[in-house]
Image (cartoon, rainbow, N blue to C red; front, side, top):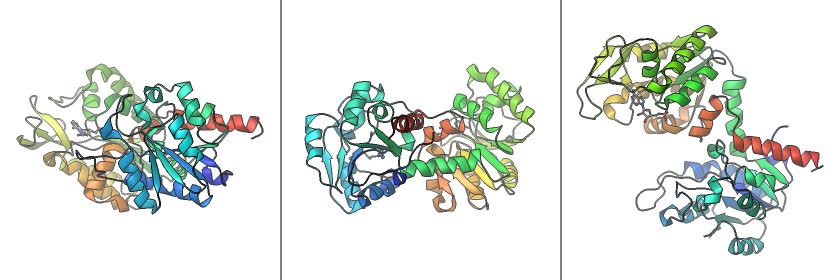
Length: 404
Ligand code: AMP
């Protein structure tokens, strides 16, 4: 059973509980520093408004850990959304209960309200059934457009679907799933995956899964050193997760067994300490000094990797090539961004830090798609079923079985 999308459903004049991801970054003064996530859900909101629906938005913001934290109120998001939609967005300082229900009952068709931060309630993150039921009570139709939280099992994306008759996904969710399928499930070949970053155990699972689907696998970033140590190279003081060395060895064997092209760095920028003012030099991958740490790929590696992607028709990228947050170790990541941006391939950037780096490089427009979900995109690449999407599938199946 496939999930239903909002534009395939009858939502005319209905009330819609729309789970969005409005988890925007705020500065110390509580100002929104980047409204990309708000903009990403506008097509779904506008579609619902065109259908004359009542739109009841819910989202989380930050990590208040089940308590009310004033600095993490969604009130500033309501204001920004109102400006972007050019229409009033009423903010309700509660998420469930009497005040919310009475505000919703006085809503007119074509109006939008935003409820308070879901994560002020501990029941949200514990996927509490009763909390899901209280959310479900607020509307006739449930739409999930929060791809970035789809890898979590929370009340607003899982429990709620058990108590509301009609469920579907929004237009952002469709875009995310479609691009993922175009990149991984049904790609135009050759397909190249570039994997970097430092969440080593997650990335090992990802390498295992991707190696069955791609033609070339390019690995850079901090996870390289666990692989190098597993195959017996000297890695000095570079980042290594010793508890997964055996897994790393098994993953290398698996990749080699698949017969795909497997590229590892041939040189690095090493530093005598983890510091912007560290002494640095470029060494080959065989010559990392014992007391130094490798914090970026070197120029020979950039040349090798950029040549390897030249004939790609599809490129999927997750994770930076080095510690790009520090200028001295950012060159490898930025050089690869520019090479990827200038290929003719379908280029898909897997959210998280890679997304940050692409924004800093100003190359967003040259990428085919940048996912809004770091963890969710990574989980999809690892081959996991996302609970938020599975719940929509079950809900749609249930509705169909009941003749809905
Ligand atoms: P991830 O969330 O797994 O994509 O990891 C992103 C983080 O990996 C960034 O904060 C980078 O600074 C870090 N990283 C990339 N390369 C290295 C490296 N060689 N050593 C330590 N950290 C790294």
